[in-house]
Amino acid sequence: MVRDPELALERLEERLGRLLKLGAEASAVCLFIGLMLWIAGGPVRDENVLLSAGLLILMATPIVRVIVSLVAYARMRDWFFVTTTLLVFGVLIATLMLALLKT
Image (cartoon, rainbow, N blue to C red):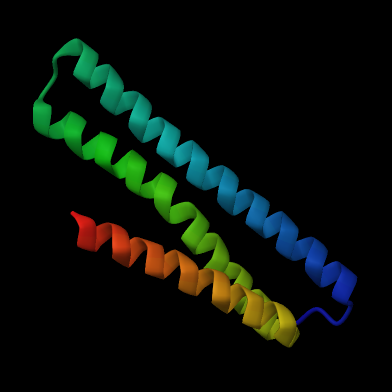
């Protein structure tokens, strides 16, 4: 466990940056390959799976970021940010539930 709060925040920012980059890259790869299959007239099932996976990864990345932040802030015992992050997580989940109910 990191004792220096500045160092802990710096490490958290680095991890979150890598997480967001990985999510964006994985999403882009899935969407690109799915789009290329669609243009080429490939198997419809494969292109739909890849396009859906790309969109799901893109939408899930911010939620995973909030969860990682929540765990990190709890480990640092920064209760203000734990509470704030829980509120953000609640808003994200409420939005997701409302979107699912609309469909």
